[in-house]
Image (cartoon, rainbow, N blue to C red; front, side, top):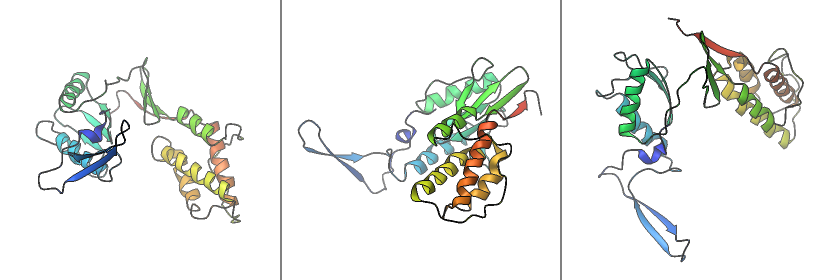
Length: 246
């Protein structure tokens, strides 16, 4: 985890238009003016400027990573065997321990980072809502704790468990009230993360229900309830890989 990553982005170039910030002093109410030297949080261009800082460093000759073409958040170093996933300022790193440590030393020399967490059978890791676990045979990714959180957030802990993620076509197109419509949109937002990470079993269902986001209806509401019931009943399903698999 790169600490306050946007603030560690490359400074503005000498030929870029100058930017200024204005603050009112909490002590005497005086207006204070500052010239901005680099991107800050809340600035529209800050994420892009961070990308233009971290990616060239990773793909430089000194680091030797090659960026994926279809998955641009994936970087691989063929010499060291280290593969990493970059999600803004969070990095998930896989490789031999000595090579991973060498990379950690390098990135800590370039950026200020939080201490690394090492996955082990005794130490699972929560990475962006995905619980990474391992035993002597496999590595697993579970979304159980994330599912519990969204059931709480959506007030759906008492929802009836379901066997399948989707049961029938959405045919009841009668409009729902604003509160229910917003709830349905929240369900799609929360479950979209599941569908696009470690729960591909709900991807088709999420796609089908999402077609009604523009005008939520009673059929969509019923399908959202059904999907949450399925997740409640099957929250411990994992994807996994053998430790020594090719």
